Length: 169
Ligand code: S3P
Image (tube, rainbow, N blue to C red; front, side, top):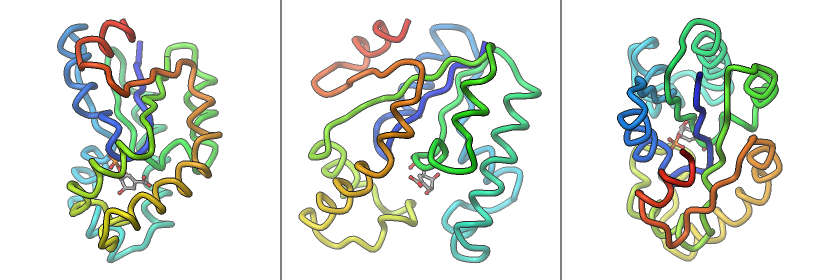
């Protein structure tokens, strides 16, 4: 089985994914890391040198490769993966894949992201917590319909890592 974790930037997909993989004795894979390795560059450099459209094409290409070729993995997507190229259809139409949306409130996401914006090209230019709150609010409004097509939605506000893990399991 492939367990896919999705959600907005900063929602804890990778942190949780690593824990989940270790509990299940699965391998953990982060789609951004996979892309970086295959393309031999960082996500920030890829955005800067080739642009976002190129990144989105690669994102779909490698997502599809992973789903076709690998098994017994926990896969954390990038925050935008579900929102492009019909990627959710790729995920939802495969009976070997189960998807979880990690849902977090806008204030919590903004706070986290303001402290962790450096390697995230879409938000690295935002200079105040107030602007971050506004950006995340609008962006999440656009993206939520895609996230909500995940098989399961897990609300993680005020939940410990252990609680979220138990919930998923
Ligand atoms: C993106 C999220 C990032 C990364 C890229 C674009 C997005 O992943 O894929 O910077 O569109 O939300 P994380 O969600 O792991 O930060």
